[in-house]
Image 1 (cartoon, rainbow, N blue to C red):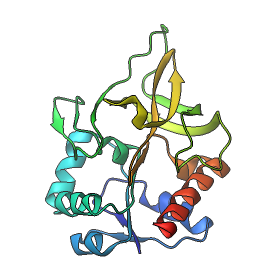
Image 2 (image 1 turned 90 degrees about the vertical axis):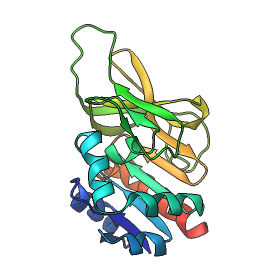
Image 3 (image 1 turned 45 degrees about the vertical axis):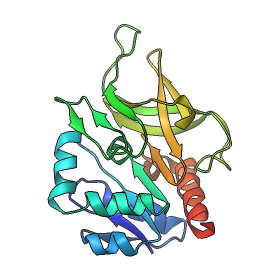
Image 4 (image 1 turned 120 degrees about the vertical axis):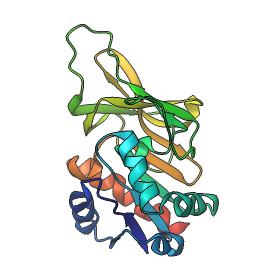
Length: 207
């Protein structure tokens, strides 16, 4: 079972449809017991980091997610869900994250004058290594982003893909053992996004 955590953080329906289109069933849940039983977990989310972490805590999801990760079972964070993987976020104050990949979530600060924040639209993602998520995807493929903050990895080797926006380079995707995250929305990124979800599902099947 692939369980998608539902604590009211949005974009679940589009993620579910993305997996349906590649023929991979997933189950939405707000029950911590389902996370404990799942073979893999999807952690989606949109909105503010602090509020999102509070929702995870209120639904009793933090410890099950950490147990899942410690058991070395696959976990994929999408958009805000990727940011939750960090140690902390600076969005509207300092908030603790799950601490699954070392790093901090910080505000986009593009050096090119007049660059709009948030970043909304299509950006190229440059692969930084073989990895899992991009294994069958061409380098510099386009993915759809909507965000004002980004994951600054403490260890650059954890960045599986990099994007440049307004002259600023940042991690578009992260991989660390069984933990994966994408800042963009694969479910809204057409064929390349669906292929990325498929690559994650193949990894789950082989794990």
